[in-house]
Length: 104
Image 1 (cartoon, rainbow, N blue to C red):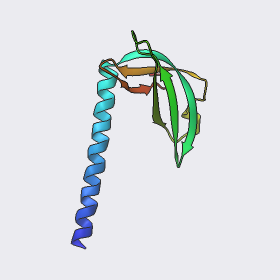
Image 2 (cartoon, helix red, strand yellow):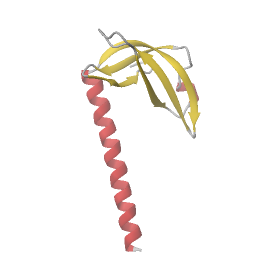
Image 3 (cartoon, helix red, strand yellow):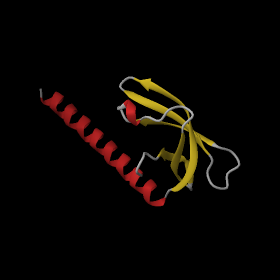
């Protein structure tokens, strides 16, 4: 029973640290990222979440970047294929990016 409790505590700690890293990563991208126009290429459901494949061209780049991100579980918040979107990306590593939602 003690071993099971230890494993559960470790799992909670790992999940908490992953959430903290994701929050810090998003905050740094919001503070230092650049904006670009993008387009949604494909949307599909993966279990209870949606995945969105999108394309954008960083400022000064010759070729576009194609990325996939998880979208909110609420289908009404997921952009549709073909929809134009704004993307915030890291100019030092354009593969780090995210689609901006309405109001951002």
